[in-house]
Picture 1 (tube, rainbow, N blue to C red):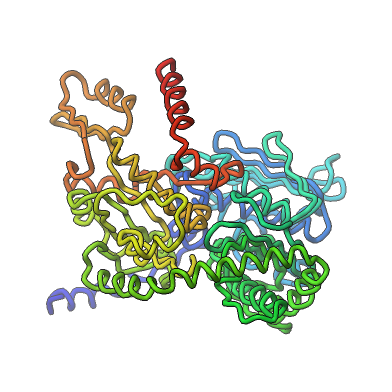
Picture 2 (tube, one colour):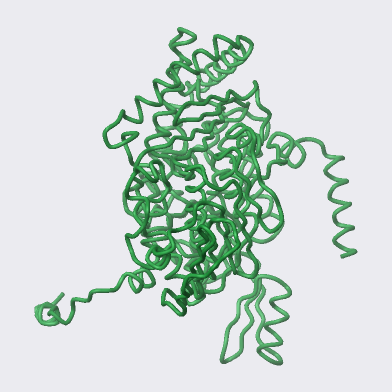
Length: 618
């Protein structure tokens, strides 16, 4: 900055430059501070799902307090309704709790001892970020309702007599002025609702006519999410403020589902750290052998839910617990979890000797494999470190997923590309603060059926593992999104399959936690002198031709390397199109990979032929 510019900046920084925003306006200008990223509904952590969750959390809190066993939820054309049968908001405070910041009934822990939301912000944020918001409370044969548009009252109705059961009804429509075009997807809503019923045994949620209910809590949750055959029956343990479910499978890595007061803490926190540590220690002490914790936890699939007084989360979206104590004046979370497992898990293993024997065999198998690859890991790590230092394959970014940099962590990503031309285009187009690039050399190895030793012996896999920093688990993951960016031809599709095989074989949790994506890039560019349109499908190309009129210039992109860096900026910026790789309950990893990547050539050939026929008929 020049002396003149500095002088002008000082002059311009006056009383007139200080602005105080009303809460409603602050929410609308800075929605990320309240609901995280916006998004269009294609990702489960997009803002429109946070709005739904904020409303549902209040109904769940009512159930946890012992009021209302059923919640009705409808989602239709972006319009959401939630009706619970709890106590209903006190009628004289319906307007205040839906529009006045830091107003609620959860500040006094006597009323909501272990609530999800404690700061009186959530429902107000939903109101401010909705084009229409309606709330009605039913209590003791009376009702009170208030209507809003973008947080501004449009109708404040007087008390009315009512024949409805006690409870609260809320209807809202996320504002397209804030969110743009969006679409609620059942694939993201259903897991959210299932988690609510798994964590609140006896609760029923009816969603668009479909019923969700759970009798076995976290045991049902694990069975719902398992994609590998378990080695022994799920260990399901309960305490006053804790519930855990534990088992092992033959998959690599560890897989956890953690919750605090019903909130899915996708990034874990102090409760999950305590659980991982205590579980491994109790098992080691039970067998009275100095097993490595990594061998004990290899293949572990578990869920832990704790109830904490006045929990402290690391952000408004509550994805990571920061609390160290169960309550402001109580025992530490670490000690509480440790004491519970030391008693209950140890007792379980003494009573179920067959399970203990299977568990010990799994630990010994993991130990054997770890020792078998010990000879290559040191050399492999040194190669990876040296390669990263010389920046041969990895063009890193400055901010990483495991940094303490606020909401920017969620935007970090790494593009896995094929060939120098594609990686060159992306490298020149990327945001160097948040986007890294890893360049493959040729096609990766088909890793199906191989042991983890190959990860260290194969240079591509070793360097990719080192770049992601996931050798010791997901805690070290350096990028929120791992994006496979290959050409949309048969070779590119094959590379995608090989990479997905690698992740599913050795790091399945990377896929299950929603970190792996496929980059969608345009197949066509259609333009005339006035306008340029990029088309991702043949249907979009035909529509573009109709829109631009006769004889537009049409370019077919054969590969990513043919797209100039200037154009690439359009495809990896705010409007980047990604397809998240997800797993369904029926997608058992071993069987899935066996079919698509194994040696069952005749079966796979018949599958291809049959599906080609169906495609041609369609």
